[in-house]
Length: 320
Image 1 (cartoon, rainbow, N blue to C red):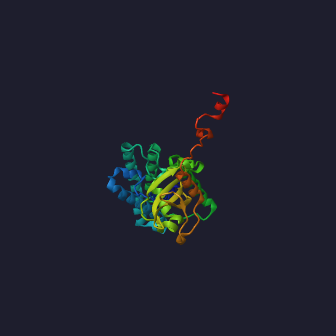
Image 2: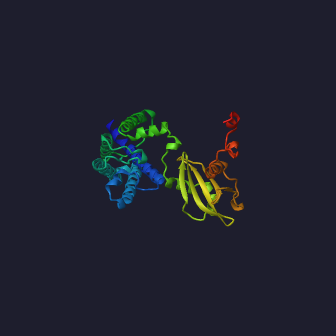
Image 3: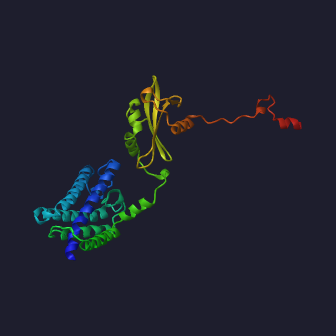
């Protein structure tokens, strides 16, 4: 039983390292910042944080892949021992860093699994890191892993792996964050998406590729948000007149809708697309811009105000 318990630590540790590495990469791509959201990088000076984040992610990836590669026949040789000792050292350093981070910056998360690790560091997070270090130390002298040939032989593996994952789940605040995100979706009016994320989404859209040739400048003239949409206006030219190319990006993370329209800069009237990029204007965006540019309707004056005496008909009839 102890032998099986020692052997299953290798795939569990590899899965934890690779999952943490992929989660950090996903957050870096979404936020367009390497060091954003990685807890231990807060211990470094500002200029060194990107390098620290890249180093941490690279080491996690190398250790995770190394554990998988050396789990078989190479597990009998020196490379497996080096990789497993390195994994143990990674978790020991991580535990020390979390303890220091908890005392220096108690308001930020550990960043172990990217954006899912935003809650402050607690005793559960430290306990998880210590147990992972102990598990890595237990694999140093483990034999090479051989997969069981029968269902009866695989049953102890499955039971122990499920029990260990359940234990790590209890010690992981990220599980609650994942369950909340699965079961709850914030209204689009309350979603927090930065202008930089909107610009990045716009540059990847088909609308941008179709109409970017009409831009007169790379920087937008204006950007504003209304409920579930963020609007970005760029300068443009049409038949020698100033125009504005307006994009509307729906505020959602995956496959947001992007609309576009060309309007006259002076009058705000919708301009048909040039022949080179002919396409009907998005009627929803056109109607909204027309509503914004239209002056407020003046109330109609009663007809009796035009009377020289300035008296309403009812007053004259009463003899006042």
